Structure formats: C-alpha cells, structure tokens
Length: 248
Image (cartoon, rainbow, N blue to C red; front, side, top):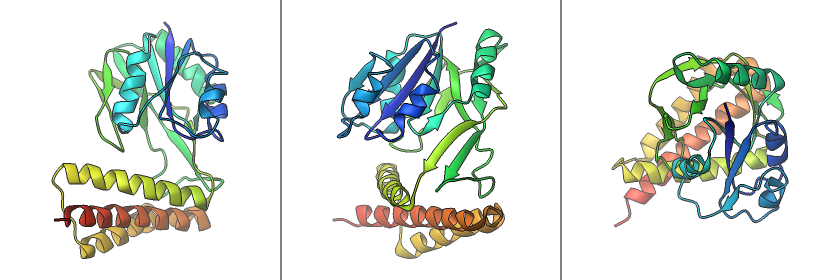
C-alpha cells in the first residue's frame, strides 16, 4: 500500500526540513505552499517534485487541495512543525499493512512549548487523526482549527507524533495574533457575537482551565507561560470578533 504525506506551508524554512526528513521514506510527499517569502518552497523541492505554490483559502480548504493531489492509498497529514519518530513510522507501516476495519488512525501528539515537552495543561496526549485511507476522509472547510471528517471507524496508534509547537515567545505572539484573527473571522461568518466583558471572562476561564483544572502548574514555568498564551489567544479572538461585528 502506497503512502502519501501531505503538508501545507507558509514561511516554514526553519521547520520544514526536519519534518520532511522524518517522512523521506514515504512513497510520495505533496506540499502546498501559500506564497512563502523565504526558502520554504526551494527546501521542499529537495524532497519532492510535487510542490504547488498557490493562494491561502484557510487551513481546511488548503489541506483539501493537498489531499486532492495525493495518489497513495493511504494519506498522512502533517504540519510543518511536526515530525514522525522511527517508532511512529513502524506503527504507521504496520497499520497500513493490516488496518482491519479502520478507515483512519489517530495518534497522541507530544508538543513542545519554548523548548519543553508539555505533559499537562490539556496538551497531552492530545490525540489527532492524521493517517487515513484516501477517499474515506476530508478536512472541514474551517479557516482555522480544521478537523478531519472520517467516513468509517477510527483506530488508535500509541507512538506520539512530535510537535514543535512554539519555539520562543516571538513565535507565540505571532501565532496568537494569526490564529485569533482567523478564529474571529470564522465565528463572525457563523453569526457569533462578543462583548468586552465576555472576552475578558473567556480569557480568564481559559487560563484557569489550563493552569489549574488541567494541572498546567505541574509543567513549571512553561506551564504558566502556556496558560497565559491560551488566555491571550482566547481574549484576543473574542475581542477581534467584537470589533468585527460592531462595525456598521
């Protein structure tokens, strides 16, 4: 059974090489780049000739573009800051060889925040469905936080997908800004509304849920930093929604 790896990129020159190295054993790698201003596309072409540069319609639609270009019987979807370990590779190959009734497989994801792999705060085990039979799943059309919609049974793997989520505070701020803007636009399209008081309350609740209820404090200073980042992302998402929907 052939495996296609699909990746979407935008200005990922600092992350994409380890990602593609980790799946260089796959039968096919498909990259859809949304106009990177750095060397991302050139680096990707060192690993595959299936690199397309196009516009940016949102996470879900962009991943579906990559999926439409894949030709393997099985597809593995990765983000540019994710890596497949040798242990996960072995599980993926075994799952494709003997999938049983499964149309897709989910796997735990181990994410790092400013150099530390987090084990609390809602970040572990963080199961994500990424391996699936082509033709049995597609991504939702969400601008951000897209999900894989599977037609059939989803089984589980045990080896984690490695995820370098945030390398430093600068990247944290960049992603908080980008994701909160996309999230606000998506909620506005769905008719959602927000108030300043609601934005503040949701931000506070996000911090308490991550740091206290989900024991983020056990991850030390990075646990506190992550909880603050979650609170900021939530606050700004609803603040931007308020400003979007208050316009005449």
